[in-house]
Amino acid sequence: MAAATNGRAKPQLPHSVWLADRPPLRRKAEQPAGLGLDKIVASTVRLLDTEGLTKFSMRRLAADLGVTAMSLYWYVDTKSDLLELAVDAVAGEMALPDESDPAADWRDQLRGLATTYRDGLLRHPWTPRLLGEVINIGPHATAFSNATLRVMARSGLDPDHTSGALASVFNFVYGFSTIRSLHEARCRAAGISIDDYFTQVIAAISDRPDFAETMELSTRAGYAMSDASALDMLNRDFDFAIDLQIAGIDAMRSRLAREAAH
Image (cartoon, rainbow, N blue to C red; front, side):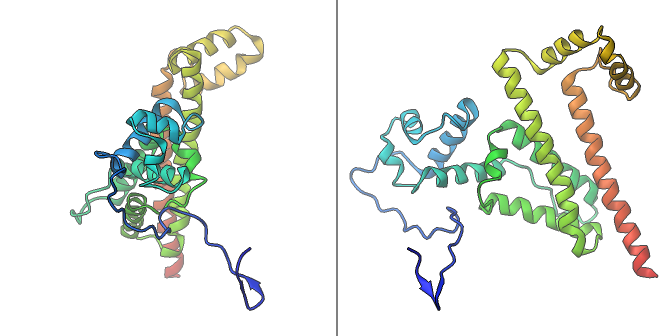
């Protein structure tokens, strides 16, 4: 039962490995030699990449490392804590902009951050789900977040609108990457590439009268559905969408500045 304070239950802080006050490790004879937290996290990321989140377990990880499952608990308290560490390891792969050049264009830097975020989520398709479940405040995630805030500070946008601008960019990237990851997983399960799957779909609908308008409108819109590479289309659409987001931020910055001047 939660402890009471002045008749009210003491609020429970959300659990996070980053908020836990874990005592430092002490070497014991039965603690396996050559095993460390970095090695455990790296193996976790590799297993999640190859086998997915649903198949991941501490026993499976221990077998991959050649140790007992109990050995892992010298380093982490729970599987959830380990997954949080894995999410932050993915954030550590994301490239941060070089902020030493004062003349660097904030637009290019924001575009780079959006692209590296997408690439990280696509390399590790289990990450989007966990991002919705954990408190993403590890050191690498915090460094990435701080970089986005510094870039936006250089944009000249009113600070009151910074969070909304970043939400428009990175929520789009999150959604785009999640849907693409799910689609690619479906293709892998079927044993075909995303381009082959796309080609099969086009072949199946191209002669059907009920899809004639769709084919015509899509071709007119620049998709050239019968010829395009699915990956090329996805990459082209992502790049344009990010440019559109950045142009919108730039336009809103100018508009707010004009309104403030009057």
